[in-house]
Image (tube, rainbow, N blue to C red; front, side, top):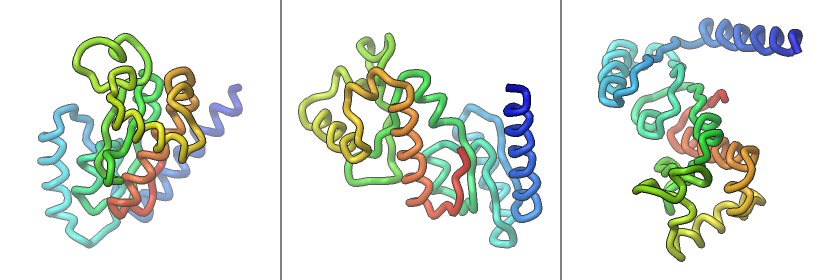
Length: 169
């Protein structure tokens, strides 16, 4: 287990070293989306098209298409899945995504968008989308691995439609 952990840490640092030689790394740990927009706007106004830019921790579906990222990395897909939600593209869009609660307390209470509360058309769209991934609604409601797969797919599609060359998970 120790060697596996050391290997992953080494792989992470190799990735960062490679990116640093070829890209500028920018990121900002700010939860308020408008502050992140201001920060990235300032960065890109200085960088312009002089360098490739890697967005550290850029998993926001609003931020990915807004700036000319070369690559981004994100943990959005795993955090969302392990908290019981899936990321589903809005019908007719690959870049606009909605978080849908699949499991947990909020899946049946409050105003959260949840699988259990979807109407017939929305449930049909979700079922169709999942069948393209060889999954069912029951799978995403009962298995972390199914939610992880759905979220990886949604992140990949959003990054691709935003023109991002590389998405690191």
